[in-house]
Length: 167
Image (cartoon, rainbow, N blue to C red; front, side, top):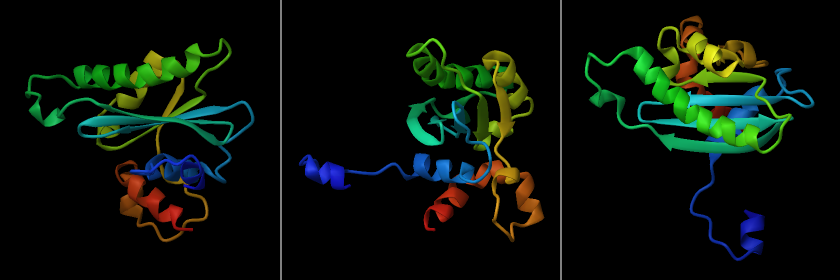
């Protein structure tokens, strides 16, 4: 905020989700020198891709994908996965294309679309990166999470990460 004020700019909003997602990984051992992690929030009508390079927030991009509720029952999960992957790959390819030795080491999925059966495996085959659902193994030092909630933690990670932001 001080930077914006110093430049004479008026902020309309600050992106808390990208910063709070990076807090999920703090202390998890996932950050390493020369390592890049991507997170993909596969929501109902958008996908948000966050790139964390060497432990620092590098890029966050939200792409509208349309309303999945308008797709018919004939629409396959593969088609939906292809749409999500295509949008996610636009961000990843932008990152990779800026340097010949850049790569994404791990991709963590969360949000409603991440729960589609076979989604992580399908993205892994198409990106050649390690792909996982964002789960409780990253929440070091957080106690008291209900066991039933842990199975579906990828659905609530934005709420949890915003609570971590308060620390």
